[in-house]
Image (tube, rainbow, N blue to C red; front, side, top):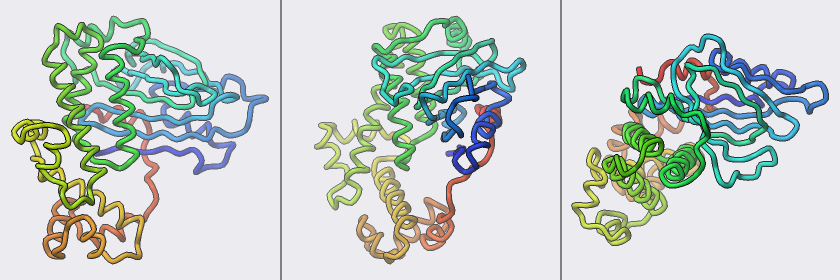
Length: 323
């Protein structure tokens, strides 16, 4: 899954806000409200991920004393909607209830704040139906947490948490579920029963994936254990993972866990790590790992000791969505 990170603490304090501004200068113009007496620097981190043409962006920023304002640029590079979910205020306290702000990058907008934690979802116009596009364009008031809106907010927070934890996510399934839940949020859910079923199936998928991840070293992890834990029949469990199959998902999660250990622990022998996650035959493990990651375990360990990438800008990222 493609994406990028911008961390302003990689440059000196007097360059930090300029770096932040440059990251999004062709989409929005962001400025400090008053920098004359404010604290120096602007320590902030932006992470972005592409879910098959739908962009999720996380921004962690300094709070009180770092108030800022933003305005849409005169000629935006892209025509997307931004669904902005502030998570924490200038004191780093979580908002309750939460509020979702819908803006079109094709229409003028501006704002001001000192939020310390924000999640934004960027939806390209070509990704939705004409009816949903018209509905999104007509939204001029914030959407307060309730019903399907609360589910959408929970899903955005959950997705970000999984990405930060390095857990695997199916980009196509995420895209489909996000668009269905957005439609359910801005339209009466009763008119879209298929959206409700899609959301429920995806949320159950994520619950089971969390259980697989937490039990990835358990020797009894398999179909029977998952059916018992979630009170599902085998056929119902298979329907929740129609594309990959449950066994393939379990193996992928185990390989992901091994890959993480290979990078964080360069002293332990690869065979011992693999055995801890249920791969007792070295040749079988090596084939499975290379099929998943394209390189051998030892090559992966060497190649992934580099630090995180700091590439690209937000406007370039958005321009690539839904292509």
